[in-house]
Image (cartoon, rainbow, N blue to C red; front, top):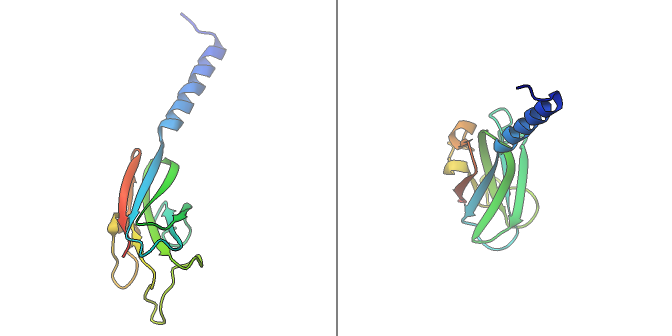
Amino acid sequence: MRFPRCFTLAGALGLTLLAASASAHDLTVEVLGARSDKGTVDGALYADAASWLKTPRTGERQPAAARVLLVYRDLPTGRYALSLFHDENGNGKLDSNVAGIPTERYGFSRDARGRMGAPDFDAAAIDLQGDTTVTVHLR
């Protein structure tokens, strides 16, 4: 039995849209450890090592609290890493002292730590294959 050409094209388009929506995932990030309820908790999501800590794919910001949820929606399957901080004074940046040591709390996905600086992308990377929730502790 042959189907009309328009039916076949419509079916193919429907399958393509279904496949595209099936590969869009939400990443929920539970952030713990803000020092106070002042300011915001800011998160930046990076899609690869080349953009790590330079050019985020997207960012999220929520009012500071003991527990903050940041949600990154409609992400394709892949590897991502997060950099987060408690912007306690609301100036939009991670403050540091004269020696360059951060004075506001910060953290990375997988609670990764670097040596004498931020961890590399691979240490913080999350393999996103479906809707996922992760926890990051600010320190």
